[in-house]
Every structure is written in C-alpha cells, then in structure tokens.
Amino acid sequence: MKKAAFLLALLFPLMSWGQSARQTDYINQYMGMAIQQMQKYKIPASITLAQGLLESAAGASTLARKGNNHFGIKCGLAWKGPYMLMTDDAPNEHFRVYSSAEESYEDHSLFLRQNPRYARLFELNMTDYKGWAHGLKRAGYATNPHYAENLIQLIENFNLNKLDLNVSGYSHQNSLAKEISNVIADHKIFMCNKNFYTFARSGDTFQNLSKELGVSQRKLRKYNEVDKDYVLQEGDIVFLLEKQKKADKSLKGKWHVVQPGESMYSIAQHYGMKLKTLYKINFRDADYAPQAGTLLLIR
Image 1 (cartoon, one colour):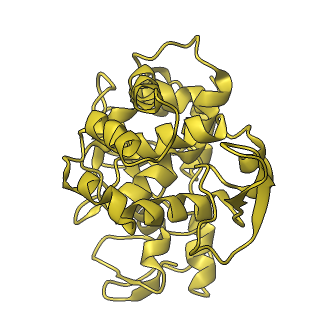
Image 2 (cartoon, rainbow, N blue to C red):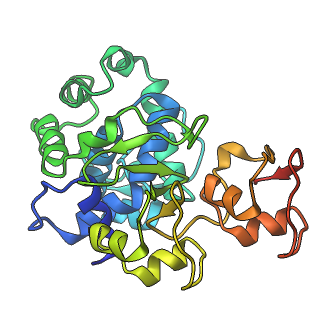
C-alpha cells in the first residue's frame, strides 16, 4: 500500500478510492501542516486543506508549482514580497510568491486572522466547517458562486472534518500528542511530530501490527529503529512512518530532563525523532546511557 493511501486509510476509511490520486497525495503531504496551522491560529484544518486542494488544483496549478502559492492569494497593498502575473478575474493580476509551501500555509492563516473581513469566522465552533465555508464566500474570499459548496464537498468526500478534532500540541504522558482518531478496530492512532503512532499492548508483535495497520514488519522495525530480534514490550511507542530527524520545531532550544528508567531510545521515541539525531545534538556516542536528572537537548 502506498504511503498516501495508507495514511488516508487510517484517517478516512469511508472515502471513495475513485478520487484522484493527486488529491489523496496532496492531503497526505499537507495535512500535518494544516493541523499545525489549526493549533496556532484556530482555523479548522479541514477548511485549510480543502482551500489548498481547490485553489491549487491539488498542487498542480501554475501558482502552486512556480510560486508556492496554494491559496490563490493576490498581492494587495500590504504585500512587499515577490509576485507573479496571472490572469484570474482580470488579465495580469499580481499574485504572491512564497519560498515554500509552508510559508504559503502560514501566510494564508495570517491573511484570514488579520483581515477584519474574516473576523466573524473566528467566533464559529472549530468543527463548524460548513459555517466556515459559507463565511469565506460571504466575506469575498472567492468570486465563484459555488465556492462554499465546493469546499464542503471536498471536506465530506475525504472526511477531512476528522482533522478538526481537538488536536493540540504533543504529549504521550504530559502534553506531547493527542489522540487524533479511533478508526482502527483494535489500536488507537495518535499523532506526534507529523507522524502517526500507536502503543503496543501486551502480546503485540510486529507481525500482528503489520497485518492490522497495513505496514510491513520490515518497515515498522525500520521506522522504529529496532533490529529483527527486538520483541515489543507493553507500552512501546510504535511509529507508522519514518520519524523526523528532529523534535517538533516548537521545542527548539528545549531540554528534556531524563527520568528514572529512560534511555536515549525511549526519549527519541517520545519526541518522534531519530535516535542518531539525539546523540548528535548532545555530542554523545552510541554507548552513552543517560542518568536520571541529566539534561538533553531535543532540538
């Protein structure tokens, strides 16, 4: 199963697989970014993703490909950055150009958050995607008379409203990750550092998790940096995709206080980061065993 299809099967099992592969790839690539924007600016992730899908033609539009502009935002008087000319409502209109898709997602959030036209949207419930869709149309985000209906259709076709659950920050035991969905029959799926994970239960093996989650045993071991002889223990964190090199950027410059019984490996798993990075940024070799009370830099 392809990575994009696997992620969407986890979160959106009811969707029609006749939908465009490009759309599913786009959702898989940017849903983590949409969730981060929701946490930061209180804009439903479903709305952000649906707008990105629609405005960028799932990343295939000229604006998205050449200008990293995923939301069709024009320059306006306040924009001092680079731009490109495109024909939209009129010939040669000025559209904002970004250095990355991440910058585009951030600017989209600021565009809504700082513009008085959209102020009433932030009074809506975070799960009211229909209210947000109609509110965007009424506030003049787009001239298409069916703009709200198009957003709602995308959200409902792909069940994107599942992303609008209370996903805030990270934490396995304190506050480093929230349950994102309970769509797997046996194991609940959580999210941490742009990745999905579950907790191993008593008697779990990589074999039974592989069958349930649709990820090969080899990949599960690789993603979780264990060899073929490692036996899962109850409570182990099992990531379903390759971990990020570093901890989440919100933790930059933060220190982890080593607790009794923790290892470099368990700490790396806790933050969803690669073990070798944890060693490297703390100038330790692979034989290092931290003592309780030691401070470790995590990003």
